[in-house]
Image 1 (cartoon, helix red, strand yellow):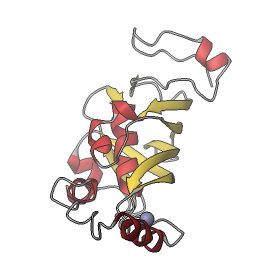
Image 2: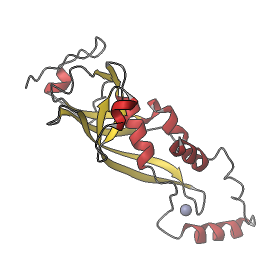
Image 3: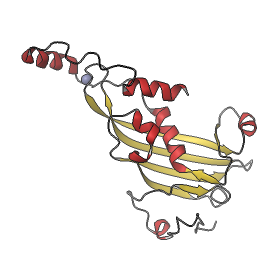
Image 4: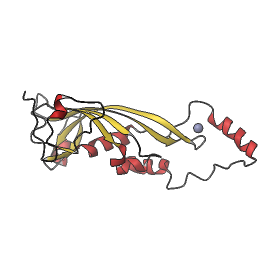
Length: 196
Ligand SMILES: [Zn+2]
């Protein structure tokens, strides 16, 4: 297999492939006509700030997603992405409504097809990713997988509400944290994203 990869003009650095680093930015997009046949492995990070939809479901868009994407053709010449991702994100604890950090970690396999019709013909074991263009936008793939692996609700492991009630009593303001779960809460937004 050839090791060099022709991306679009804006991604011209072969150095990335010679010396991959943990914090290398992954390219915005790749050429779907070539990347599968070349069995390219892309590893690096994607800033969470670039993922507008996903950012709505979390408290802070700081930090990166660690990404590994292996592109290949299977025995039936289907175009597959075998990927994994990991990210630490801030969400709201649904017990105490304070911020908490959770680690999202997921592995996925996607068959990249051109049309909805092709997607329907895939074996049930394969999830489809529809890409009508030759331009396969990696951030869209990662963002979707992040949303899918995000838990709907998260709780602190320790008994956060007990310590919070204690703090509220100390401050003489019971129930100070109620009423924050309106329709614009990250919780509600995530539910909407997953329902799409
Ligand atoms: Zn909590």
